[in-house]
Image (cartoon, rainbow, N blue to C red; front, side, top):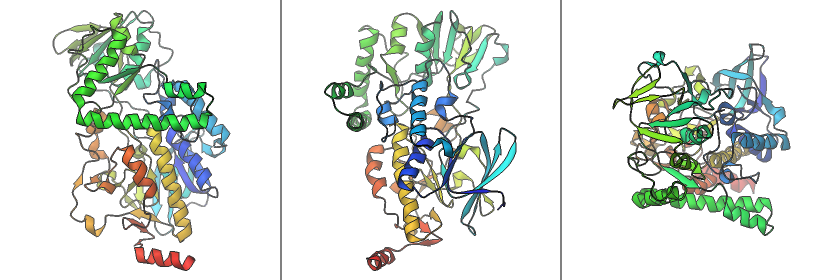
Length: 507
């Protein structure tokens, strides 16, 4: 351990939506703990700072994507600018800024069981200096995709294209697309955002998709919130009630997508027709091959994608790319789509722990060789929690939930005088099947399936998986018994009889 290392109790990695929320909970629930947030960028925001493509907005409602502790008062679907403003207010109101170290790229994390400490090495980008931090606990809030290198398939003939090609994640806001022919490759949440924005100024937009996506169309407002404001209810109460209503509705929708997917699809089509007209044709470009919510359901406020299609500003082609040409792309069926600008909305590259090299007692950590505990802790890796949110519900719901969990865990360790916590398979788990991170029939977007062998594994029992079910986790995680046998403190499992005896002596 270097003498020059800065020591803190907790080190939070990332100043995005997860890191800022986690810092708030740490301050509130563990006020004596010192902490630092290390952020690679020169400002906060994470995803909302990375993406600068036209129309960038949330695809979750801000009543549940916003933190539970700060009421959201705008429209449910918000722009990146509005979300960054909201996050900035959280930082300022809670003096979190004094704890953030911007421009620090972490180059390695190593755990010592002898010292019960993490040592974190980082490069300070302002002067390229190497700096060191030690901490008792590492809170990984850096997200799960590569902010610098998006996923671009290796298409044939890309060098021959004479127009402008760019991935949406790398979009330059100075790019002028007014009056241009724009080709968008992809049909997921990013495409659903950029297509209507491009359609406002472009000569024409074409969306080329390999397969169709489900869309949910609705007005960008919440009638319950508007009504409660009208009758004078205070904003904290509105926030709490509307969050509860939305989460209930989402739970019902998720269950119905599994039990009656065909009926759900008919209802989704009815919502689309409200914006695109009763005679709108769904075949072949808007009839997915998978059930609703097996991949992310793209939200379209005011049905803007379908309004663009109905107005003739958007064409959709369902096909694969044979090759790029000088003027655009030629599809497998032989159609050439000419475009002045081609925008790839082809997803991102999965990043596990920010691609940071980890060691435990001198041995490199291969995350795929670990088994996850509820998608946040990992066998063989002490004093670390990774915040990984939800696919079907707002990411931030889990930020709040895991904020409570981590703080409870830290306080429990202080109360019991323990320095090290890790999870370990129990004797009863010896014959448990070890499986991929998530079941393909549960949630199977391409970015996850491409790199699932890089993620930690799951066990066949409920506690050894991230089930992506907020509605069960909101009951299970807050009531977690921190002395149950999967938790190992200072190298020992705590027996229930010992815990009860200690509690009895304390009284």
